[in-house]
Length: 483
Image (cartoon, rainbow, N blue to C red):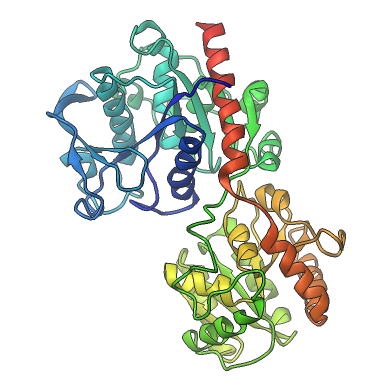
């Protein structure tokens, strides 16, 4: 049996402490699955002032230490929480983290670089040095960059390997090249493919400097090698394709469990799917839709271009002509919210919009919708389709990225299908998938079989955690070979 590893996750989101998107779910769940395999896994995060320190029993780890912002020494504190079962460390700095949210601040790139520098400085004075630092998305790309260009000459860090996970290639952290000096990195640096002159692209830096790179689904790892989805970094990714792989995100089956979910009007399992009808009625009441046996189609999503909201709007009238009810939960771009409100005003008995983030309502949407839409232009991993299947809401998805890796089309594979898929990003293709789903829905026997297969799909973290175990050991071997 292989020896356990010491692994440090470094990220700017982690459920339950702070969540904006799927990144937080991964950083909140994967460490627990790795610890179940015997690894010593810890997590490092910024300490935003919106995190309730008393709720998570945050306590100082010791005396303040010095971390650098450019050449400025700053008195920095490290706090710790063990409330989730995973030792989680929080960097506190008055200037950079005394803010309610993580994204959208004008100095966010500086804040993220400072955060990563502070974590490494804290490790320098710690008895615990990881075998692997696992950095997530561009926000923490400084860590693998520093380990590559400077850490190999530092006795404390020379043996530390790095893994860089791309959760969404479209967000890259591009800024002026003065950030390199602010980061305290050596002056010499080579220009990277896809990196504009006079700028630093932190996503590119993570890809170029990490020992291994992975994405959150096998399909997405292949898709980003092509210009259509490479977001300007496909050439760099092709250069490093021998270090690139895809590992499908998992789902925390304890967090997402319809048999124990307090947000549902009626809890259920695979043997009591009929109880979902109470959730549907509760959802209709909540959204002020009239009670109806018509198929209820749900969508829980950020309302941004990536998620296919434009396709939904283009197809909306044709969809509603099929005598369905349609419900959307989410917030995002004002133009999409306004257009969806207009749709709700025109079709108050068939369409409802809840333009907010609401975890309890999202759970009721999963537990009460008959069908669940995910229309993404691209989808690195996706979690919502997994949750929908766990809650017996049959997904209709565009076959891209992690959606293609998880949803088997019930028309093409009658004995294995757990949803319905379409490939072209067109109204015609979407409506075709919807029509196939509605036809299946009219047969109770077929529909129950599809729901049963969907609920039986195993997207737990156990399998993915073993793949990450192998990825960490590969990173260590490659790091030693280059050392």
